[in-house]
Length: 66
Image (cartoon, rainbow, N blue to C red; front, side):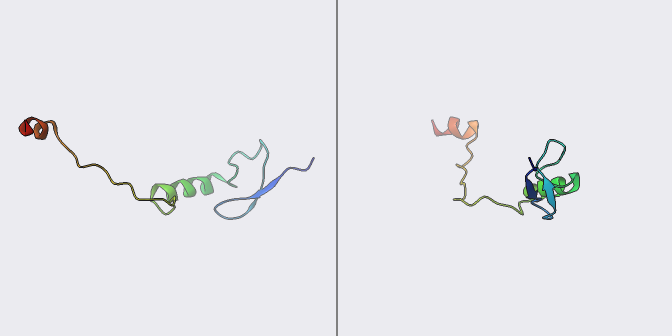
């Protein structure tokens, strides 16, 4: 059976989808690391509503309210 070929998400180079392809679906460690860096620097985003954090209340605020 012929191995499945996928394109590297970063550089689009063909990659065989086999256990020997250590960085699959990426073609190399460099592409894998660059992709992770893009997520970390928020170059990639998942669509959705923005999250709004509730206002921060310190324990001192609660004590003074009573």
